[in-house]
Length: 114
Image (cartoon, rainbow, N blue to C red; front, side, top):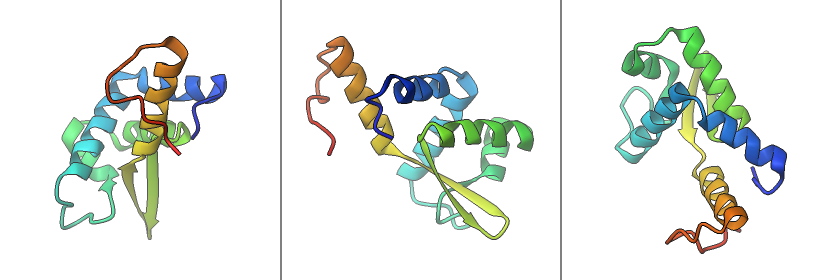
């Protein structure tokens, strides 16, 4: 996702405005940074997110869909299982666009994303 249009920027901002979605994104982001679990080498599965956050499957699935629609997550399906990884490119573009629009002058965000 480019984040240059108002609609795209707001879609990401809306997705990040929910505390549960931020928790999910943080959880998946930390999981991606560590060595992948033996059960889920291709991403974090819904059941692991449910267990970690103590939420029902339907609630987790709803929030994952919102994050995915905003371009913040990649989803990979293997049979009946869905695995999620963070789209770091969208996060970086979002931060760069906020920096550009509001002249935040944040260190480390001067680099343009190709």
